[in-house]
Amino acid sequence: MADKTDELIDQVGVELGELRRAADRLDEAVAAQSGVNRTDLRCIGILYRRGRVTAGELAEESGLTPGAITTVLDRMERSGYANRVADPSDRRRVMVTSTAATRDLGARLYGEVELAGRAQLEQLAPDHVGVIRDYLRGIRAFYEELLAGMATPPPGPDTASAPVAQAGRFTAPLDGVSLGRLEFIKGAAKAKIGVDASLTGLYRADFKGSVPDIAVDGGTVTIGHKRHLLPFDWRVAKSTIALNPSVPWEISMRGGMWKLTCDLRGLELRSLEVGGGASDVEIWLPAATGVVPVRISGGASDVRLHRPAACALAAEVTGGASQLVFDGESQAAMGRRSRIESANYATAQDRFEVRMSGGASQLTIDVV
Image (cartoon, rainbow, N blue to C red; front, side, top):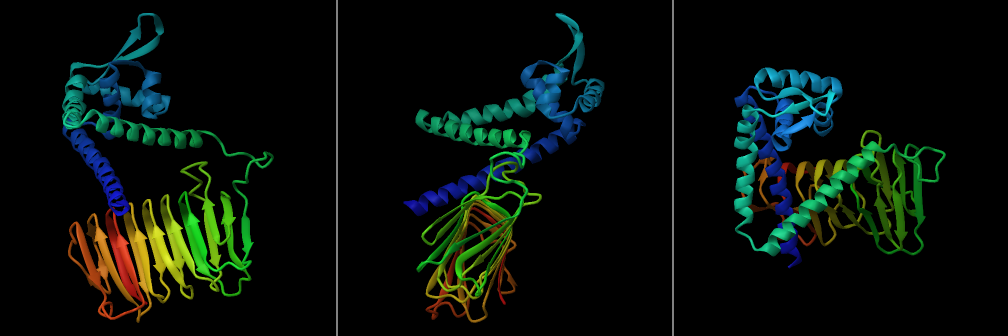
């Protein structure tokens, strides 16, 4: 049941991404057909929904500056998509009103989409429609939380909050730990994970930029980056993690990974999980001990897995993949579910089981 739920969640993530891309292509096509640019089309959509707004309200809702909205309104008036009139209640204020052309274009683009969406929802039971509503509300609330964080400057150095732009180093004693586990629970950007045989402690972590919350419970090291910006300061954030190879490790990274480099050679790896999306990820796998599961889920782009020459590996991809290269050979589009095995996989006792779900693009698996 859990595997089925994970697969459905991955598929929802893929479909949401495809929906965004389809909507973007539709906007692009409508803008080109109507002879307007994307910024003007966004303002036309707002005016279609609102009917009548002030120039300031249109600027705020579209994310444009007052100077930029003036230029946009000039173009919209010339194209027949807006009228500027004085507010009868305050002659100093300018109102922007829709036109027949605005309503026609809005009905063709937004009206038809809304009708199609209603038709899909009307086929469902009320409880199912409520689940979709609650999911969309939750995602919107999260977006608004991120936007609020972007609008609020991070705490300064004189506050009691955790530092945001200072270097930080964290360690923990080994203290009889027999199994280590490293968990990123809120994603990471520009993270490097490696192995250091000279370590006497369990691990060492160095951070540049936002210093995360770190908890150590036995052998489990949990890292949760704060969400000051996007969701933390992607421009300057950098993480370098060194693991002690005297104990085996499980590694789990969730919440989205960007520019992740893992050199795990020399480590006894029990499992590896990258969830919630991944982009620009390069992983050097160690020699396998037993059957080692590797899970990459929630969509992945530009993922490179390197394994030792004698190490067996099987890769199973669900949710579709494109531009797959396995041991130097480019594969055709794999379809919804495919599995590929290295030549020595069937007889190997020590091997990697790689499963990628939720869509994959530019996936490379090779031997080093």
